[in-house]
Image 1 (cartoon, rainbow, N blue to C red):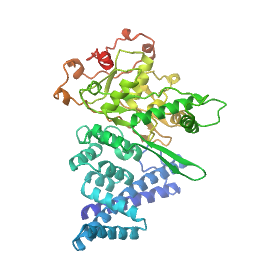
Image 2: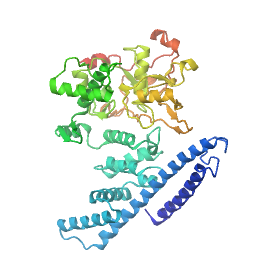
Image 3: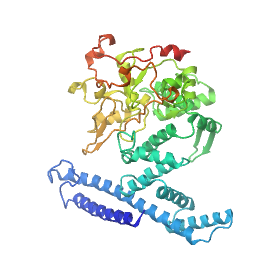
Image 4: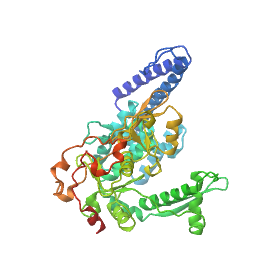
Length: 506
């Protein structure tokens, strides 16, 4: 960070301190009115203005913490550079290691933290100062938290500089080719940002996901760790499709045991079911349902022509070979989805197994990928289709008026003023809080298909009608749902590959 940038951050800190003082005065009742821009009459509701001031103050403090983190990065990286310059050149690897240990120990002593924490800070500071200028700039401006910056450091580790710059630009440069859509990176909770960054990294890593998966699969293992109060942790590192199937099957079995006379929670039931299966096989009286796992497979990858990663619901990209194994060894149903070759977004669910209510639920899963509430990671199989504007209030049964909140946030919507808004055919709903704040939706990171196996050109079976036009938004009314699909007056896209089922079976 240059001296001018430091001065700008310090000035911004002064402005933040002044703003926090205003919010504190409002919260104390000394300065009624809103400086946050929301439409509320100054002093018309003192208690509401006080509540808004507390929230505004929290938001401003979060920006101050981000800017302070930017300054800490500047000072940590600057000290590391200065200390290395002052030290005599190392005459051996051992002497270089001792210099590094001394540097870490000095920072740990100044900050009163462990040497491990100091080493992590110095590593991240060097990465941000030398390799991630967009991330450091967003941190200085208070647009990203320190947790977001650390996620970016983690997900760009082991990447070559051009690949790291591309990942950073995708999320932080709105002018980048196919920049991330929807909620800005800094407005995602860090766990959701990590999931999106990891997913993008998996798809664009210079080493194929097939090669990385083969290498990592050799490290599969089961781990046991004692804990307090007579408890312990049992965890397993295994291929994603296996883990997702086990989780889905245990969840379905736990749900089947729920009832008015069952005192255990879903979480407790899931653990008890898994214990019964592992210790006694399928225990008597314990349901053993088939796991339901959703996987989106590009057609060329399914046919073995391409190696484009597939998407496992609730996880992210998986190797094409894993997706083909899922299809070949256990898939009992297929759902045909046409996607826009320019963006990768779904265009329409095909006619092959077309039942409107089911198709609309599947469309919601494709559109949302998870519960659309801010920060929630509940996968789509656990969620419930719900009208955004209630039917009794005049809401239609159409894609643009449907969401799929998880049970927890479904209850929150009906029991509190939290309200989902502004869904479209391709975008999940955002949410408006009781205080009137708006939280934008986290959209899917669709990408166009990889046509490299076909020489970079659309396949012969992709007619012009399919490649170019964008259809009108899909928004069926309830009466449409009651009619047979052939009677709908909205034409479906031309099916570019009607023999897909025969190829998939082969």
